[in-house]
Image 1: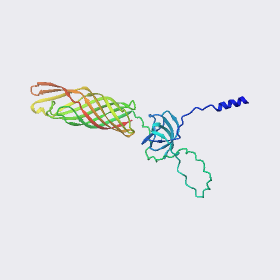
Image 2: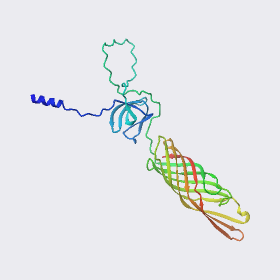
Image 3: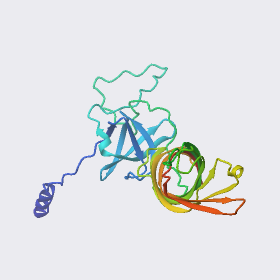
Length: 322
């Protein structure tokens, strides 16, 4: 019996390993913090909490606290919040609003002060959160149709600014990277002082490339794009050469080039987006000019080579997602 008692005394004196104490409650210190389903920035957002919101700590996973909060609409909500967005509550423990006093006379309080009541299971927020739409993870629609209109400016001598149309298909094989295939059409008027003479240059091209969204801010995202294109333009002279007995023909040789650009995407609906896109294309064309004398049948041909087009387009369009 003496040996057993000594052993119990030794065991009782064994020091316990210290454990990191978790705060019972934490308070949001930034203007607006995201409460997420899991301990990751990729997890869907459960709710957005304003500065001063008090949360009950249920546990810790790395740099994230697992917490519980009372939503005015949904009731109790559990989630994860980054530790850098909150601070432990050092003041008095938050308490719920006192209950409505009963109609009957309350009992006489005891002389000795009653022990402090335990902390509430879910403390109410110190600042009432604004009524906002519930947060949800945006669905992923890989396929989209892109239609836009805007202004077009080329580097052709004496060429004005024209109105152009874009239409195509966007396939997002990743949430941030997609394949863009589209075509361009835009007539540009050329004054007589240019190398082509007076007339209308039809800017037409088809191409494809990548569209990248490096970051996303709720319903907005900047976009970058670039790729290759095939130009199939045409030129229509303004003068009527039949009056002087000539048949005048021009043909623009097809060629390849590339384009780069950027812009901003705004989500109006899960399936409807507005896209502002500024693109610059780089390519040159060759125009074959043929004049035929209607009387003698004599032909005179001359090429115009190395004619720079390099259109710059500013387009605003709609992207329909499927």
